Amino acid sequence: QDGGRHGAEETSFRWQCVEQPIGKLLFRRFLEGAPGLAAAGALWAELEAYDLCEDAERAAAAAALRSRFLAEGGSQRCAFLSAAATAPPSDPSKPETFGLVRQELLAHLE
Image (cartoon, one colour):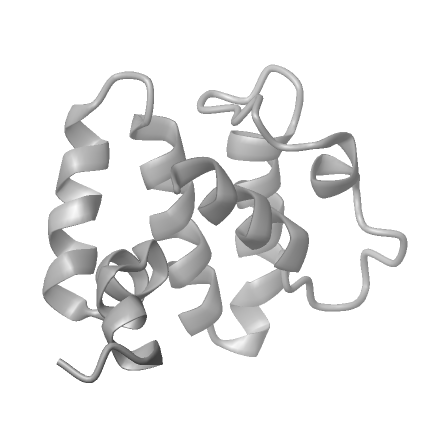
């Protein structure tokens, strides 16, 4: 081993569970089976599905994601997210990126 940055990358959460396909799949399966983490795993899957939506479907997908995971009383509300992450968008006509939600989700799972 070179002992440099490459070695540290190989042991990082992001590299193993987000960037590597097999690691991502195994970690997602782990989340599905862990009662306290199942909603976070489902949110992660829905955020990835949202990224793949056609433009015409994006607004409906964003609304469904918000009501299920971010809204008070949502069926899989992720209470670990901050008020800033769960706040409704300032301009609902613009496509949402859920950037802060993604950051806080990954921080929670690390």
